[in-house]
Amino acid sequence: MGWGTTLTTDIYYSRKTYNSKYEVESDLQECEEILNTIKGDIKALVVCTEPAKMMPQDEGWEPLEWLVRTIEIKLKDLEEQIAERDNLAFLLDKWDECHNKEGYAIPCPDEHYGKSYLDGDFVRTTENKDGSI
Image (cartoon, rainbow, N blue to C red; front, side, top):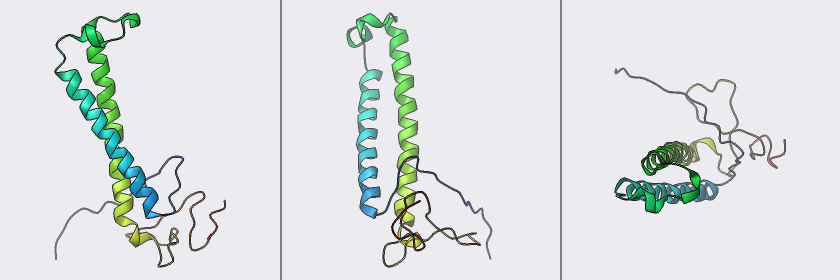
């Protein structure tokens, strides 16, 4: 036999309901586009030799302070988008495992250890096919 570590986790998709793979794929694609934009912004800021020409003049910041602050904000945005992308990729990866053949989500079983399931407000499940609360 072998040994290892098992991770069982809950991921909450705030204010989102996914009832098809297409919805997840669409959000994942949008997330990738946002990530690429943020990466481009960071690259432009990192090679900026004259931040005073890039920054808004009415903010009252020194150019270097503005540059550091802007890069910190972009890095935070990057971290958040990476987490969202990873959560969506995980949902997409487990989609077939947590849906039946008719496309309805399989809600949390009584003993859910080691089983994938999908449940939430407005999610169409095998027990709630219209997705009502």
